[in-house]
Image (cartoon, rainbow over all chains, first blue to last red; front, side, top):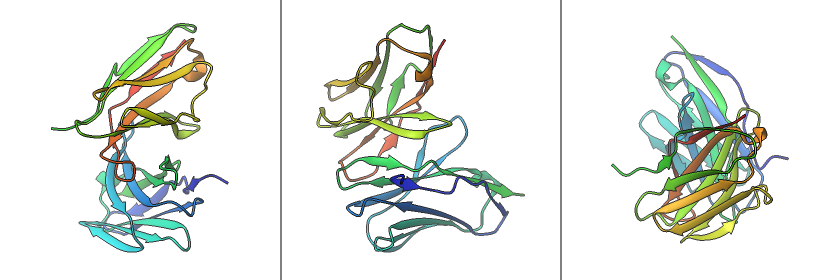
Length: 110
Length: 113
């Protein structure tokens, strides 16, 4: 079992719709959780961090964390073509390893 | 504009040669990570440091890779000898503490022929 798992996609959504991205992790001792966006040929860019159960909103982005079920999700409201990218889930484990999933490719169709 | 700086941005080398990649973390950050990214494996954690001390380098092939932090402003990743399978993008990231966000440099694209 991989430490951090994501569906590779591609996930295609129409412009203006809500994109929902999911991530599960295996280490119950994990303490902090992050979403990064990576455009092709570029470096990962941090978009959200979440540390406690529940929802955290920042503009069009909402991160959701459920430690009991060991999943993290990212919702992107009013999706735009410029949101088309690979979204990487990262988990800081109980041993402070910062582990990434393989990413979900999102396509927002104009 | 605080950012992680990596050099070189691109490197093409012949198999068997030594390669050194450098990273300047964001000033004040005490945690540094090295990652390798390939299409097949995604982002793999190679090693990480806290306050210049290596915490874990279990992700690195020990026989050919080494990572060091000679001082707080410089982290290095060395491959000796390099092999074609080392071709990848190598990222450095830094964070203010072990448990918070990490910010990435622009990466070094390594091609070993």
